[in-house]
Length: 260
Ligand SMILES: NC(=O)c1ccc[n+]([C@@H]2O[C@H](COP(=O)([O-])OP(=O)(O)OC[C@H]3O[C@@H](n4cnc5c(N)ncnc54)[C@H](OP(=O)(O)O)[C@@H]3O)[C@@H](O)[C@H]2O)c1
Image (cartoon, rainbow, N blue to C red; front, side):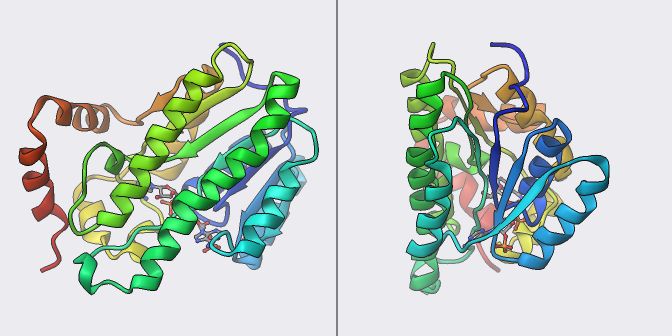
């Protein structure tokens, strides 16, 4: 498989109201897919749909809070229509600080969105993909997935789940015609830093733009490449942790995220 999917396969992008998800929704609509764009901010989704419409890009806003049972069920139901879909599980957020001092409810919300919703939607989308031998899942993890991240402990662990889960699915679905890719971006200039409280770390890491990240991800998805790490420096960083003892990696990463 080394080509873009037929635009007749519909796409659903979570977290399409900003950042990487918005760029992904634009790119998929630009390729001719009907894109269901999911997020909580209705005004952003409507503005995106209106902006893409004159050039023929079909974006359908779907307002849902994927941190809630009602939101997850509504989006899962949309994917269970017997068709093959391109599912981009992109919605996610991070939180920075000492775990014992962070808001425990918000930490659980982070697991619900970054892990439970992603898992649930993947389960909803894949049967239709397998039945038709096309479509697939593009899950968004992070370079944070490759090592523990002290002071962003929940975030790093959720992304490790996404990486391992998606890699395993890629093996199970090999040869089925269904594409499975996990995108592991490094620092990217989006609203993520404001939400997570790590704008300074992102700026120091020379962030990439979301359009470039989304383009890399779709190229990898076209090739059915399992892991996509945009940017050579990010790839070197992500894989180099395997050459160093874990105890050293933990100690090196901690000061990068430790709040002052
Ligand atoms: N930026 C980075 O440096 C970076 C690096 C590695 C990985 N990532 C990953 O990339 C993905 C996209 O993040 P981004 O950088 O593009 O950040 P972003 O600009 O903050 O976008 C996050 C998106 O997720 C949506 N979202 C948040 N909570 C939601 C909820 N409960 N239900 C539904 N949608 C929700 C937001 O929309 P609403 O607020 O409208 O709901 C928004 O569209 C995330 O999974 C993130 O972990 C980012």
